[in-house]
Image: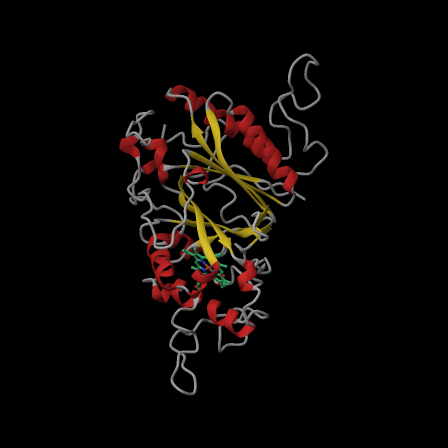
Length: 378
Ligand code: HEM
């Protein structure tokens, strides 16, 4: 499978039709020197341009270098096609000011107001060891080996400047980000991504996804903000729930994906529809009602999550769920109010638990070969 263009106005991997596989990683920066951070981002950008084109991470390659030196590519993607690999980078709040309040790189002044720490939400069960991070890299590809190879080589290049904080593999996309794609299903068996923002939605992408001139500091114009939430799904409980109850919880039919009371997957959601006895067709606590733009002052998200199964939990249950990722123009007006509403009232809460959280400012795209990720910030 082919290559996705790396250079452009926006980073790839956001409106790119969601690939099948994910390897997401968050790093902490260990160097205290701004010049080292610049060098790292320059080197990562160069490597990313090569990797996404299906080439080795370094100019020499996995097997053409001197036998006495470690190769500049680890080699496990030799012979594999680019597989639609995209690499997308983001900067966490702690890059601007660390936990002890230090501005290590002299950029605290340039922190966008929209990169405000997420508030705690009711029912949060966050594990700090798999939350946050100074930098993130999202690798998506149609082949898991290609995604893992890319992350491994970026981590190798970052030796001495960054340390890996946490990482997440995703085995199946739970969203479509283009009308050219069929809607996939999440681990609850429901179509997920039906009402998502899509690559074709030009005006809506400007309104809800890409940071516009004047929104905040110039270095973020053309960028976007990413919220990640690792959401554990208690699938064993879900699996003992009746079909009718499952559909009432989501607010859509399990088979067709149609909103309750409608026939087709893409029929509009009608929140005002009532049944024979005046009861709402879409229950008051249905996920779709509470997440819908009409309930949230028009706020929308570009969701780009993945299913995960991280083995079992030692209690006879799969450690499974949804690695939720949503891109948006301003989390303070989008993710935060939507999640606040869901955390209070969503019928899904009985079956899910948020165990990790991340927030990242994803700068605009790299336009030329001498440009690099975050150049306008640093
Ligand atoms: C819609 C599942 C968490 C925001 C949906 C749909 C499903 C679903 C099946 C309907 C199909 C669609 O339009 O995509 C889940 C599951 C979750 C989860 C299983 C947790 C494990 C979240 C979270 C948020 C969110 C944390 C945001 C804070 C949305 C939005 C929609 C949606 C904005 C579209 C609503 C509309 O416009 O009709 N979700 N979701 N979801 N979800 Fe979730």
